[in-house]
Amino acid sequence: MHLIYSDSYEISLDLHPWYTSKYRLTLDQVRKHGLIDESQILEAPLADDSDIATVHSIDYYRKLIDLDFSDDEAKDAEIPLTSETVNLAWRMTGGTILASRKALEDGLCVHLGGGFHHAFPNRATGFCLLNDIAISLRVLLRSQVIESAAVIDCDLHQGDGTAHIFRSDPQVFTLSMHQQDAFPFCKQRSDLDVELPSGTGDELYLPALDSALARLFTEMPRPGLIHYQAGVDAYAGDLLGRLKLTENGLRERDRRVIDAAVSRKIPLVITLGGGYTAGPYEVARLHANTVLEALAAARGDG
Image 1: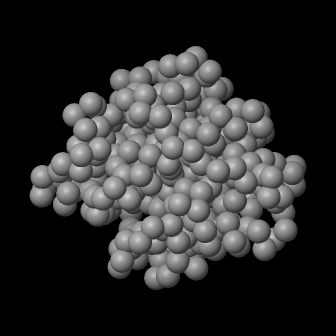
Image 2 (image 1 turned 120 degrees about the horizontal axis):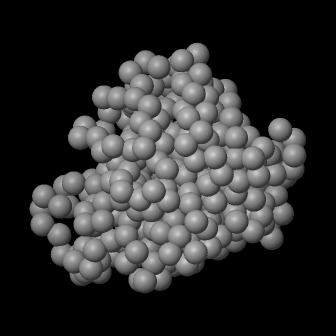
Image 3 (image 1 turned 90 degrees about the horizontal axis):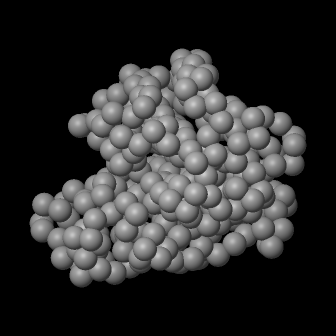
């Protein structure tokens, strides 16, 4: 199993709750377990402009290139709109595309980054400039490398951009499990939305996940690829959410999603998604747990 990563993922955002140092720290923690060889870590490339065009409009592409945004558009993005953040979006998108291709080759791949599921074809929102999930799937679908795909989005926030992009596409099934009353406050319609009330913990979350997975595989038994958005912001200590999963609950969530794909021999790509604890070391530990569960499955330890 490969991990996709780049040192260039770490940029300065001052006091922003998105700690980009978490990607490096996640890799550091995984390395400490001694379960990976350096040859398994691949550098994320920049996405091609033609890849971006599979999802995003030419007008929006030009806004990103020229950094030409209105005050309202910049406010909606909720991150600084600079050449550095745009370059990061391009590279993380390239990383997700590469991770998806490696998943098809090896059965399982983790991108230590990515998961910008709020980006719409013509606008940035919720820290997300490019929808790397949608772009990677469109690239594979249009090249006929796969004929269908499923998105299992367990980030605390609904994958609204992804749901919108694939709203009329029978080749992609979108499943989103999210906090009902959290951002985005104007929800889109996924193929399956599991809306959870504030305070939901392990004992209610995990059975709801089992039911959602059962429905997914009833409606699309064998997608060509599953994209798992493994955000850890459902953790009880997250600053931007009010779900109450424990660290063990998050690991069990990951284990169930990964096993659902691996047991059916469906290629699985994982992006880290969101996580906003009080410090980068804690969120990196939670993300590292996801990677460790993937590595265990790749070794057949599940």
